[in-house]
Image (tube, rainbow, N blue to C red; front, side, top):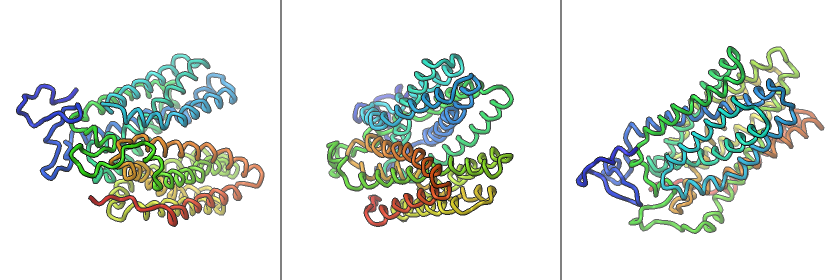
Length: 430
């Protein structure tokens, strides 16, 4: 699909690392200068991919319930998908590091997810749904690293912060639009229609992906490598990467982040339902929409400030917001004010949507294992989220919701101290 395939030998292209590279995509100073077509293609790819992934959220439980599934069966399917997603984080990153075309891997993953959505709609029987849930989880494990790799390959390490902020904005917009469209389809038609819409949305996702020019995605940058002629190539040994203190500290801080964050919204939703059951659905919807709007608004600014201020100040802001949110959930009683508290969730989400891949890119710079490092942090994310809901629910049942929120806020404060006292600055200035 390369637009350079028919160029003459004297055109502005050359072979690098086995790929035909468009030299017009490089500025006179040697910095990447991708075309607007590729950048816009990445924008819309992320937007439509968020649409596709939204179809596999809470809609699965609603749909399977209408198909007379028991809660035990639904929980088992969701657990199997969660386990596959957790186990697949590091292999998914390693696959992207080994790939010769990140676009091809991403395209195959999207096609797989589209087929999974069709399987849900066509045959909602246990073996088919388990297989679809497993394949969807496995495909998702390569899509996150693929997006970050394509972004890094297009714009390079010095511009990646602002690009990741833009990625987060389009993902947030996609999530919001998809939730509205799928909710409307489910209400007007049937819960099965959500998965048919998801399948159809895979088509514009693939079309947007095809707009990204393969020749402008530098394969070495995608994997966090340096050009062969560079003197600052770094150590390419995997064990050297995984032993790096910044990566270990950051992965631990992300685990604490998820341990504090994942249980907050479910616990708050339960509390809202107990206090105002009539308006619970509307209030919970508001609690989801408010953070998405904040992420869409702030993410590009986070990317720019990360380069101007450094990474640590923004990480501290994100953890401070999460700590305050937990304390407010423990003390605020008015259900409508709880929606306003979700502004802090949006602030934390905007920071970490950009910071997680950005700091991984900093740490893995020159190693050639950028996507494997993403998988390591992704595994920490999954462990923290899995433990959070179980521990949060247990504490809430035994000691009350307020105690659970205070405990989760304390975990966030631990993450804040870890960043403040142990985490080094990772920003590169050249």
